[in-house]
Each structure stands twice: as C-alpha cells, then as structure tokens.
Image (cartoon, rainbow, N blue to C red; front, side, top):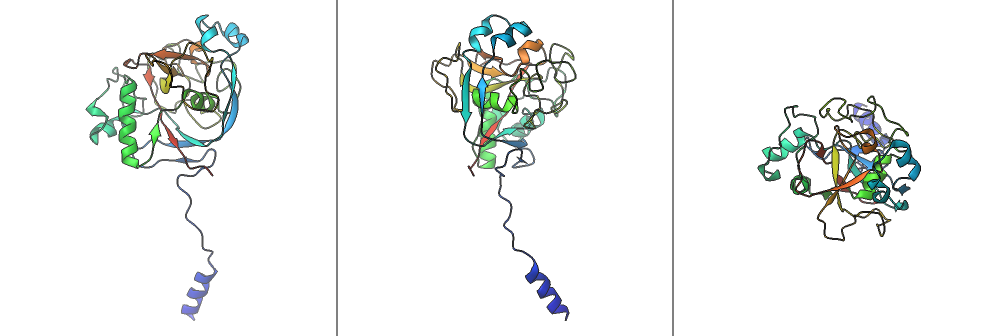
Length: 274
C-alpha cells in the first residue's frame, strides 16, 4: 500500500518546465553569478526624448542645453532589454580585477570607501574592459546602454523632468554637494522601472558619440555612433552637480579618456525576445 500511495502521489504531480532564464518579463530581475550585477528587464515603449523650453526655463538650465536637448523627438523601442538595477559598484569592479580582468586597474575611491559605492574614476575604455570581462564570465553579451535606452530606462515610464516628478530635493537624490561624496547604491528610492540612481550620485557613460543636437538622431533605441567620436555621451549627472544637471533629459559629451569622482557606469544586456 505504501508503494501505491507513493506512485499515486507522483503520478498526480504536474510536470512543469523549469523557469526561463533570464526571464523576459517587465520588472523581472536576475543575476548570472554572485559577483555579477543585478539586472532588471525593461519593457518596450515609446517616449519623447529631449527637454521642452518650459522645462529648461523653469529650472534655470544653462542656455547651451537649449540646442543640446533639442529637437524633441519620439523614440520607439520595440524590444526588451536588461539594465543594471544599480551603477557598477567598487565590489563588482574589484571582483573583475581579482579575476584577472579590467586590465588590473584599481580606481581611486577618493577616500570615501569602496564596497557598495558606485565605482568612480573610470573612463570609457575602462567600461569596455569591465564589459569584456563580464561578457566572457557569463557567456552573454553585455554592453553600455545607448543614449535612447538610457533615457527610456531613466524615465521609468514617466514624462516628468526627473524620475519622480518635476522637482528635486535631497530626500530623492544625491546632488548639489549635499553630501560632498557618493552614497552606496540603492540609498534612494527606485524609479518606476525599479532602477536606482539613474539620475544623480554618479553620471554614467553611454555608447553614443556626442552630437551637439538631436538632428538626425536614431529613433529606434540604437546607439548613435556616426561622427568622429571625440566625445562620448554621459547621462544622469552626479553628486557634485546642481539640480538642473541631474534631470532625465540632461546630456553632455566627455572626452573618452576622462576619469573623475562623479562619473561611473551601468551595464545593459541583450535579451531573447518573447
């Protein structure tokens, strides 16, 4: 009788397929190794990229950005992709170095500590070294976000000037020398897609070559790689910058060799499409 009960019980259990990995479902999260960044799945979507004159005038944005954040244009991203929930941290960078990657480079932490603080003092080539290590370790294709992907992810489904509305205060982000240093990732609430510190704390390298305006910019989420690429785009602003500099639409180009204490990066990963 015991054998029958066991067999009957086993026969009654439904046969289920193991869950897909990585999950391709908006908001799903995964990490591919203990040292790997936690990734969040971002859904397809449309948004208007750039800033309005009202936004810039209201917040006192420097006039040079009137051109740089114009013309506003609709972007349609028709695919799922994954984005790091946080900027890459010192812990994650140091794991790369310990594993023989990242060209053995140990960035200065400015005396603020390492651990879960976002890595700083990394230039564009440094980001590529980390991405090469991470891609080799996981067998998957990691990369920087395109500028359009960054703005879609940074907006988190909103059309406001910041991820959390049209105004900013020190309870929402680390900016304006309020703390005079970076904070550990995740110290502030996430945006609507579950991403932390898309604006403020540290600015983030993206793939695109810098252009002085959006005339001719891609509208499908792809990176804008034409031009001489003497500058690479940086998004999000950092702990030392004024509030208007940490808006979702704010953009600027930096020399690819630039390393400083308010500039880091986060990664993206291509996904199979459902």
